[in-house]
Image (tube, rainbow, N blue to C red):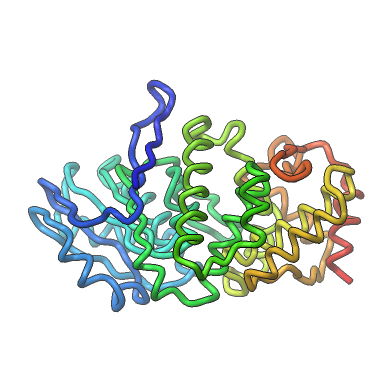
Length: 348
């Protein structure tokens, strides 16, 4: 199956997302596969057989969000220089969201920009992180604060990679599927809350529908100046949780699940969401083995960390909130005490 992303004129390059169609990749120039030490033993050798290039190299980095930093980017770039890649070369991101983000960022920097292709191996990366051209790394101030919008030349989502995915990683990907359903498609959400994603056909439907939603949103708003910001539902809270736990306590999707519950609490407080619906969304997340609670130790510290989020500007915090199911509200006018009262619910 093929899903096309077609951008507004003059904004960026159109490209396609292929689902279960990867057989062979052909490049006239050099290519380098960027992967990590978890994915490499599972998939690197079989993937290399699918790649035909003038010269083919590999860069294997350590696995984990804690390695998503400028030091790792420098290592990747140094390896590319050592391989003598040129501006007609291509990088291949074989891995989850961390690999995709860093490969895209390295591609945007190397000799002022070379092509890269996404080959996501996790559910989260397939339905969300690999689509849309967000690239970057974390630092001590927060998540993804250093990066660039840089679109891939193509994305290949292969369900076979998910067979080796640990249950926890799979659940983390489901969080992003739930996110898109709640924000954009009530019918999809109603189906999803009762779906068995261990069933191959149901999983394929969930992946396809999520990619279709993401592709449509990204095509409308590549640089996140409007509707694309809605894809950050739950992320304003999640990024603080990740930063507070040094990117080791939770997988990204797990933090997003908790962040959605926190956002829902705020939406209930503001009269945007019925309490019963907030509870139903939380049960849906729990059904897919996702955490929904995080104990806030320092309310003031947690609140102040919001201002390091990329979506905050002019000393205002932007929150993406559900306005019922299938609708959304973007709010930057919420009183500090209202926010802290919601944080207080998670400090008890």
